[in-house]
Picture 1 (tube, rainbow, N blue to C red):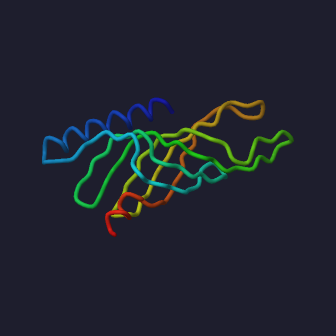
Picture 2 (cartoon, rainbow, N blue to C red):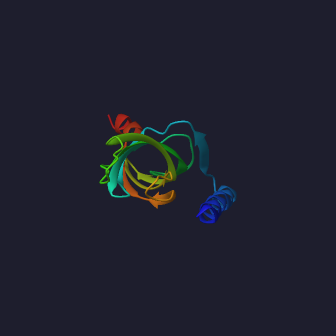
Length: 136
């Protein structure tokens, strides 16, 4: 799985470089993006706020790749149970058009006595708060 993640990151950086050469683009690094996303991953939900990222803006569209500080909501079914809400850090790709956002996040579940640690792919939708302020 780490080879796949490394390859995705490498491809993203290469594509961004070609986009920069091909046209006048707006590639930036940001500590926070003002986007709130709710979604589904690993039989539970999440609420995240886009964190440190590299992003590319073209007119009203924006692509971001970065870290996702999140709250995960999941009820354990086993005899030992974790808290229903847990903090988590993931990474993923976010596409925004105007004030709407779609996201594909990756989260890691650590190894437990019951299962091995592994990566989980999710999907989410959300809203860009910065764009809402511009429309006023």
